[in-house]
Image 1 (tube, helix red, strand yellow):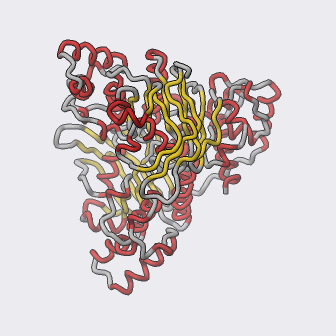
Image 2 (cartoon, rainbow, N blue to C red):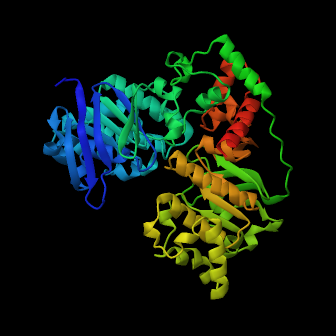
Image 3 (tube, rainbow, N blue to C red):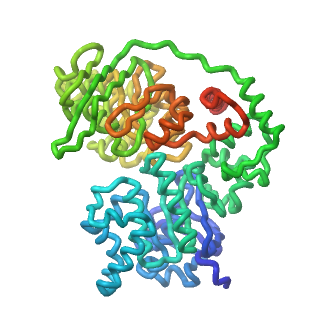
Length: 569
């Protein structure tokens, strides 16, 4: 066997003990030392199961039937077991917080070495070496909860690198990161791979973000099988991504709309190396000129007015510093910015979970400070990122009815309002189902329905599409857009720049407790100064317009989004 092959699946299959059909079928896949491989696919395609086979969680934590053969580092994975595989494969989880064990960063990195009874002096040297490699040596004495999201991911990476593993496995590394930190994470993965020479496997459905750095191979999965295994340039030239429900990079879609015939030698998978002939650039410019300019919507009256809002937590953190922002009736608007910028604190103050120490906060011209939290909840609905943190009832009907029952609404009216809301949310056929029988996206709809049934004027959602593949992302966002068309004002706190561009004409940008921009989403993502200040990520359409000599990148973005919405609808 080739010594460079560190992972080898041969006619491999797996069926969970509790399921009637296999999740993986006839997998043949080899990954070599020093390779960086992206595994992509829609939810339920089997990519997470494949990852669990590589790191030993299958069958150690998820029992089932294995067929075929899997070798890691030339050894039978089943014989190595969970501990043996942990010496060869380091896994960085989607949720960094779920991976911390130590009271300090240094303790957390040293955990594996302590288990191996490594002498203290040697342990200190190794921890310092790895901490320097991932650039966290300045926070070694900090508690994990005291560091930023990007630093947490670096610490998680350091914790699995101390064993000098052969494979680094990243499970959706971008899911909980703001755009700039996501770029840093992809850059870090690239640098670590080059410095260590280990194999890197990235499982992620945010294809464009992963392609911020070069990828050697892309594996596309669908319904438990490998649909594609090859270079990303060839993949982007075809239609498999769209057929599989995976979003291709926006600039690739724009080129296809313009009629540009993509070929692998144009290097479409890495934007800095994308090559277009003068005729092709002219083709894109002509397409842009032929697109009708989107019509500006009329300004509606102000529904929520926040002026000079100031808030400091008891521990002394000055989270909001004179925030001024208005939300108009019937609007769909994004609130964006880096982790810790003040977005969530602002939403807490609006909902009444925290009380601003200065400033004016009005709803329909009425001072919100005169409302109790319960009264605010009648007007302003808040939907948390994780639906499992909001659900408290077993049955769907009871969960949606809970708020009305707490308010003493008559049972007949409750039934009418709950059934009406379930129909709006596409959940009426499941009204008598247990919540546990639903998918993650359906649970999200239940939490939205539980708020919507109270008939609030504003729904505020925290990261509504976090962790969702393109299909489920589209379902959730199209549903929210339909609510918005029915007159519900929708405010989205999000790290997702695609979401902001596609669905929200306006974006309010937070940084360091202040609003630094309040303008159209296209303007925000085509303004390098705002992007840099707020740790956002310029849209790839901005770079494509520059490459093609288009002097109106904002308008190019607007027209593309309008065209893309038309095509997909």
